[in-house]
Length: 235
Image: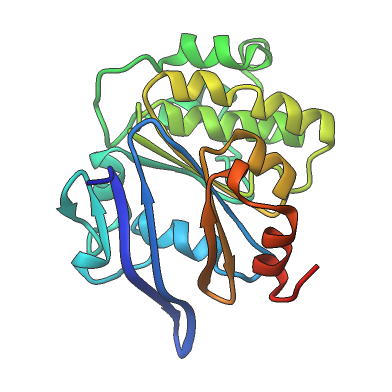
C-alpha cells in the first residue's frame, strides 16, 4: 500500500468539474511530479489532497486511513504540508515568524527546526528579522518551503514553486530537494516546467483537462509521450 493515494478523485468548483476520476499513488520517500498545462487540474489535485477542497472519505487515503473528508488543519496535523502557489506569506510577520507559523497544528519529532531550515536556505538566516514580503520572489519561496517543513511533514506538496522565478533561482530552490527527501519526506511537485520536474522525480504523472493522461518513470517516458499526454496531440 502506498503512503498516499487518491481513488477516482473528483473535484468541483460549483457547477464546474475540475477533476474526473484521478488515481495517483505516492510511496514513502518518493518524489512524484505532476505536470500539465495551465488549467489541467494539477493545483486542484493538491488542494483536494490537502483538504482545502472537500471530498468523500475514500477518495484520498493516507497511511491506510481514508482522509478525503477531513479539513485542511486535520490533514496537516496528520503529516501532509502544502507549499501553496503564490507563496502566501503573512505580510505583517518577519521571516522567522512566518517560519514558526509552520509548527502550529502539528507537533512532530523530526529534523526540521529553525536552524535546519536556515542551514537549508542560509539567506533566510541573514534575513530572519526582515518582513517576509520585503524579500525577493525566490527568497519568499524559500520561506514558504521552510514554513511547510517546520511541521516535519511526511508528505510535502509543492504547487508551482518555480512560477515567475528566474532560472538561476529555480535551480537553487530545486537543489534543496535531495536534502528534503533525505529527511524521509515524500514530495509531490506540481509543475508546468517539464524539464525541471522530470529531473527530480522518481515518477511522473501528466494531466490534461482534469484527467491523468500518462504515468511512468522518467527514464521510461519519451519526449513524444509527454508531448502527446500534455497537449493531446502527437509531436
